[in-house]
Length: 400
Image 1 (cartoon, one colour):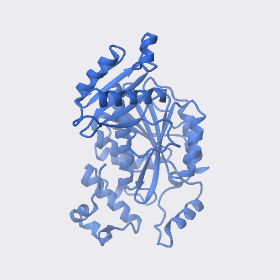
Image 2 (image 1 turned 180 degrees about the vertical axis):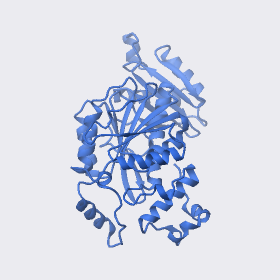
Image 3 (image 1 turned 180 degrees about the horizontal axis):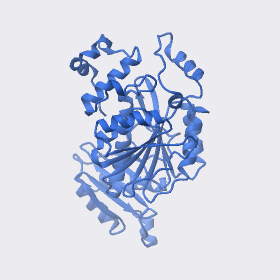
Image 4 (image 1 turned 135 degrees about the horizontal axis):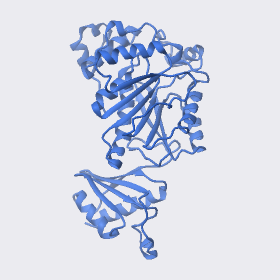
């Protein structure tokens, strides 16, 4: 997780010092927000946003919080796609990219030529301003901007035909300016509030975030692609999250997950779903009521003084399962395991002598200095994951 060291930035850029008091940066007005964003873009990501690019009306989202969302997508979603299919290049769709295309710019800087980002927006002036920033920083090879009609399917775009697609969105959270003011008063506890900056299309939508994301879920069911697609969005309200998960439970979605993180003192969530039994890397706190399946298990070793190598684990699995599993070492410490439906490692399976079929579950075993970590990357039966978890635990504890 990247840490933004504001004190170092303030020492480097004197113009920030007027907002730096007693070791803390104060966002006392919108100029303070824009100035810090500009310096973060410049210093860390080598992106120039000049005075002429700063609009008086548009929202300029704070960089650290937006970076956390991008980091979550890269760590939890891109990594397993790479392990599963060997993908080295990816496409992101940024729904509502805004006047500064913050997500698109961050992803292009984080992933370089490995990523293509399609940023869409319904506001023509926002697209124009974002386009100027992209061209000025020579990012047009990585980022394409699209002006969309309001009310159209947000995912109705031309995807690249050679890579998986991941979507992201920072939706309008509120249904009215009054709702914004009420929420701000509750949160402020008497503190002075910043003037609200942001256009109606950036901040407001009929029915608030719940209706907006509900429509996104409906839109996702109309998208057809030959490549895997992960759909994700930020959610700001826990009451919205519960209702959205219920909608996903009653749909054709195979998997849905929630990742929680703090942005400053505010808790937000990334809600994700897909239609092809894909699993994210879940290494954060589990929220059982919001996640369809647990996909991660840490297996502690009790009987051996040192952890077995991944090569030793591979041989132990091969001895137990013969040719019923496809085993591939993808890195020195990681073993990819593909299996058909069913617990092919169990005695019951071997006694019934069922024929092998096509691979339907994919796991990854990772060795560390303290434990073996098991990840479930793809599949539809949680019982199979739990059974395999027990199998790996036994062979590690008893096999060496």
